Length: 388
Image 1 (cartoon, helix red, strand yellow):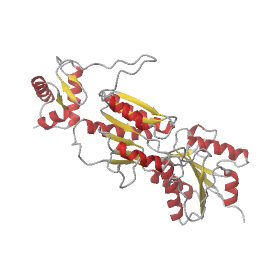
Image 2 (image 1 turned 90 degrees about the vertical axis):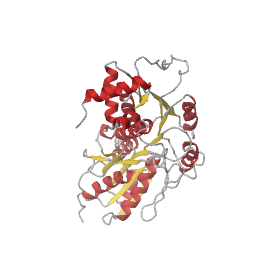
Image 3 (image 1 turned 90 degrees about the horizontal axis):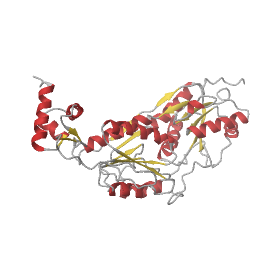
């Protein structure tokens, strides 16, 4: 017979009052119920003033409070990060800011304090931020390194593998066999997202497609590699090409920008130009459609097409990749939308799972992939064959 809720909560109070602070995971094991159920009970009991809820623990009401963290005044140093989760994202990266907000919502709902660190554009900027957070007592780490090129990514593998607290990578997937291969991660399946874009254009009758993409992040490199593989494998695609979406979309600066890991796809259409006259390229290759990454570059390229007399979608169908601001253009762009906010939520939930003690620290590593969706807005239309 299922135990009444009030009886179970009374048992929780008895354990806490007799022992002092008790981990939620320990209570769950002893009472033979799920951690989620105990966490809900502890929350209700805390709201009723019958116990106090701490980080993954339940405490007696009379137990001395741990020192509170006082918000720093303007110009003062923070009071410290003891017990906080350090959240590290790159500067000026609107895509990952959505991921940040997803993680924030989960952590705040769980009563976990967040210590946000914004990594500047300089190569290797994340490491000193993480080291400072750990020195201040951070209990866990959520991080999305910039990794503008393959070399900077490899240089981060060693120290990230040894941070010593539960860590989850957000929207990053380390290379197989690397020191971070066995680190928890949550990211979008960008191969699937790229396939959504190509399949949509092919279904509309487009046979010559250009990918204009960035090449300065793991996401960008995944999209470039996926497009080359998918386009080359589709018999319907007669011609394809990969170019940079912006002269500034290159892998540098970094410790070794030459070792960028940039994709130079074999077969038809490989193109290494660093600038881009998309209108000229479309005419040169007879292309009728383009996939553009990321959103800001996509909107600017669509503007330049209009200046060159090429209207979207009348003359060229476009699918953007990122869907941060794609819908805001004068021509709202059909876009692949990675689940940015959901990535942050899933990463935070995984970190909380580790911090709660619900699983052993040496338990199975979790590598979660979430699927993007396609938001159809009208910047791509059925191709009308030219009269012969």
